[in-house]
Image 1: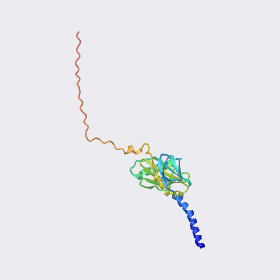
Image 2: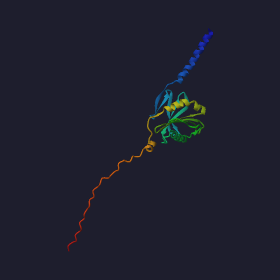
Image 3: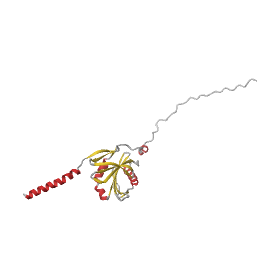
Image 4: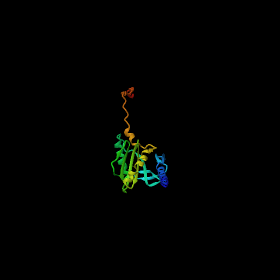
Length: 211
């Protein structure tokens, strides 16, 4: 009987410990509009704030229960108009790395409209970088971590947030519009100008003065 009670108490203790953890891990995510710039799916207990990044103004999102790891979201203009997705992504990746001072640690992994890369900042921290092409916008989502193991441990959560970002405004001065415009076709019918009648002016001879 004592053994049965001991087992029952042990099971209740395990349930009391594990249930709150499971509930905390299953916090539902919902779409949030951030600074009227983009929509991103975040858990309810995440906060966001403007930050300065090497690539200009951006927005940081942070788990309030894990304030050490901040993910930054930056939206900028597509820097290449190639119809080849991988070439397009590589140009934007190189451009972003140059602006932010990220040295690549891994080869980029290309998706249909995304590219992922782990890199290193000048302060020695590891970056998890995710770029996504959406029309003329490039959505860059990146984080700073102490080690590669820390960065990869956040990969699943990081990628889920990165792929949920939706820009709310088209880019200004879309680079690809002019390059993609087709020349105005020449009309197939030959243009024949309307004949203009000519007027001949007859000038009468000047009469000699009578002396």
